Amino acid sequence: MSPHPDALPFALEAEGPDGGWTHVDGVLTGRAGPGQDLFVSPSGDALAPASDAPRLLGAVGEGDFRLVARVRPELLSAGDAGALYLHVGDRAWAKLCLEHSADLPTVCTVVTRGHSDDANAFVVDGGVCWLRLSRTGGAYAFHASTDGERWTFVRVFTLGTAAERAVARVGFLVQSPTGEGCGAVFDRIAFLAGGVEDLRDGR
Image (cartoon, rainbow, N blue to C red):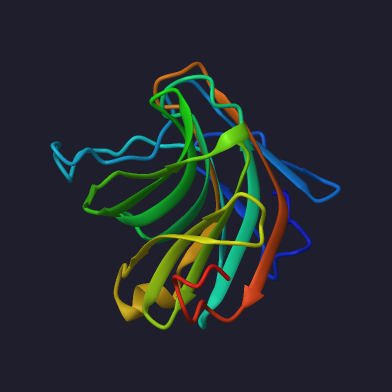
């Protein structure tokens, strides 16, 4: 049976490689194995098999929401990360990561529409960061915070059709594309009704 943080009003199911997911006293942990990632190269064949990484996902249903968690990944090798993840289709998904990029803990985003893109936002001191995935109407947004109070806008985007958004799944991902594995700890997990009215006001 998959772990189910009490803060979430929906069940979570493990997908992809075994992440060894556990949930104890409000703390969710997972681990990616060597070379595990979820990414479709922009220069590759969009029909080729995608790489894969451990995910723990649940159906979010309809309506606006905010999924929040603090993440502490190990960040030993390039690309190691813990992430919030959104899935609306086999080649339609997005992730908000705290990632080991250029040897620094960095907030990074990927949105995949057939192929993946990849963008860095900002460096985080200490390797710990709050992440927030939200939906407002037909738009999704990524925010990050160093204290869980003041939020920095990272990205806004649409993804999938209205029918796909109705069956969207959200949750957690761990990856280690170049390394020997990466563990990540997620805590302070919360799921809140309502989206984000002003993406740039820091709330």
